[in-house]
Image 1 (cartoon, rainbow, N blue to C red):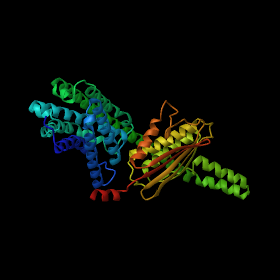
Image 2: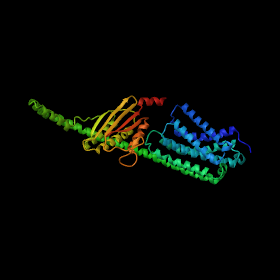
Image 3: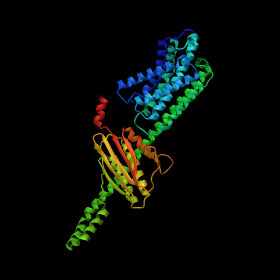
Image 4: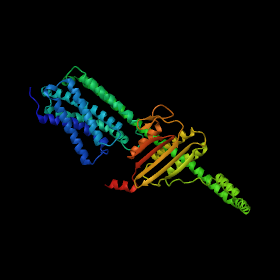
Length: 454
């Protein structure tokens, strides 16, 4: 039997691994962790490692179906590791894309071999002949291009920075299950690779599975997009609600100020009488009572950022109603480079959790404090501290929810937002105090415009 040449072997494996990388590019082209030149080098290195592993698997002592499956797993692990190293994206998203495209790439290889057998049976059984490279190119045109066009638009939308990324921690298991199904159905067969590929029934069966899988992926992506839209809408409504409450509160303060100016001459008459009697204790008591009644010690504006100020002011009112001490040493400029919805969700969840924990303490014993803001250009750092009654249960890098089993949804949303801005978040407990520390890197409008021009 005529043996294939080394060039035929190399071209075939480059095409096979290259089609997977080619499919991944439209989804991940903006996710490089390094420069374009370095990223291109890493992708070339993936090709070299893939071909090298495939060549090891073709050694005479290793040409068995059992070892072929192991070679496939080694190649899978290598590609996943290299993608994680080269690309900067959530692990769940990368796994989802990888398993989705890897199974499709495997089907392209299987379909190409089926066409080769039908076209030139003798050369197909000779291994990696030039006919294998020709048919895999045809299979890429027939299957790959329509598949990428079908799912590219929707999938590229969920690969951006916007939206809740917590769902991807579990969604990758769906294409992962299809990958395991592929491995089991293909390598558990008693037929050899060529015998399996030569049967039209096997091709039709795998094709039907791939079509069903892609429709499932499409539905998942649409659900994720709808979920993100709903979460964004809720965040906007929540922010608007707090801004309306702050406006009502401000309007009430203005009305009180007008009334105070009207009544000021009466208060001055009383103060003058007390001062004439030199009753300094009564004078101090009257001033304190006046301050409490008119709420002169409460600030109307906590920071320049309208969204953050609305959230902080809203929870200041909640703290007052539940008798919790509320301290604010926070400053955030009007334009900070953080999406308004993210600001609302970030500060809203942290302050809401802090006040809920403080509410479990006896009235007047609770305390919530938020400090920090824009510490320097491009860096936002702040802490939220609160007293608690029961120590929260630690889970990994965070804490479990006190409302239900597992991690808190609000806490996970906060972590996702912080990570989206290349930041860090730390949860810590000290005695009876719970502390959340956040640091985020943001860009102002000038920097963003400069980046677009570059």
